[in-house]
Image 1 (cartoon, one colour):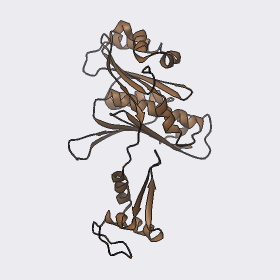
Image 2: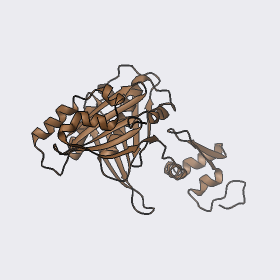
Image 3: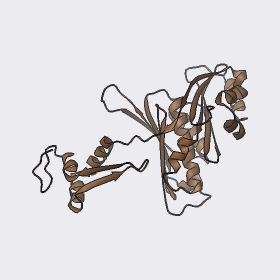
Length: 296
């Protein structure tokens, strides 16, 4: 299969000192949206966040996971997309029962914010290092919002574009290399070529052919090409930590009404069941469930 389905390609424009990422999502995106009934406008915004998460994870050099989160005061309350450096993605949106089909980013409200969180893996079983950048959402499009984020938080000149064809997604990012002495002419030239990209090329051509057609004058080199797929990072350990964060009193109150606690992952539907003994043991390792003489 050509690498314009569920694929990520990192590249370098040697002449212009610009790096870039090209992403295609097909079955991955379908696996995400089949788990919920999203209005078209919600799906559109979530699609762009999902592609952006893959683009950013490839553009920034680290080992771990990156998430994008948009929060606002509109009928679309929250958009969340996550990509790991292993190439797995997941995404979800929270929204009201009624969402206007023409909702814009301006409708997200004055307090709307964009947060990008990076969790870098550390050796052994150490907790990951967590970095988060938050900026106000002050753009008319998500691509412009992401470009502003990189300029404000990373001081990196960035351009992004998203395309959607049926249930297929594609996107491209280019960035000036921070360690190079770039001229304005180099960046302007790269942007001019970038702006000639059309949806038909992205969905019809192989990734390498797209890059050659666009950037062959800039001595384009493919640095990496790898597959992408849907996968959820939920785990019993993560659910345990979430239960602990609720507090002992709330868990005891819940168990008084039901002898077990069941938690379902919103992303993939996986269920995690905790008996009363297991739930109490999160707070007291040697807890005994009511009516039981068995220790855990």
